[in-house]
Length: 152
Image (cartoon, rainbow, N blue to C red):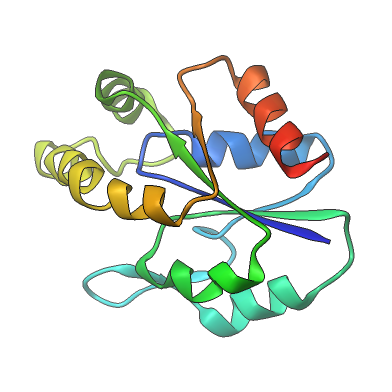
């Protein structure tokens, strides 16, 4: 089974991409949901035991996970692909302002935090990624690029 992490800053399309992959029949899991992450009081982290159980399964041709938390690097050795989803700042700002599935990034303070993270965290994600996809392309093109990269 191929194990793939889709990571990136808020507003880069992680939830949209993972939802589209699931709709196409792939085992695709948003780690922000289903009790896979927890709030420490200062940041979100993966529940390592639950992520480990997911990675230990072998019940599909591929497992796609999406998320962006500090402890994700713990699992990099178990992943076949780490794909960074990125987008230009104006598009991220527009997506955060108009999305209806998550309120994070709508307040001025949160938007400033996202933009700061793009400068400080995104380079770290890029350094750990095996591939980068600019999600300003049409969704079908983004999905096709990801699937081709992982050999599906």
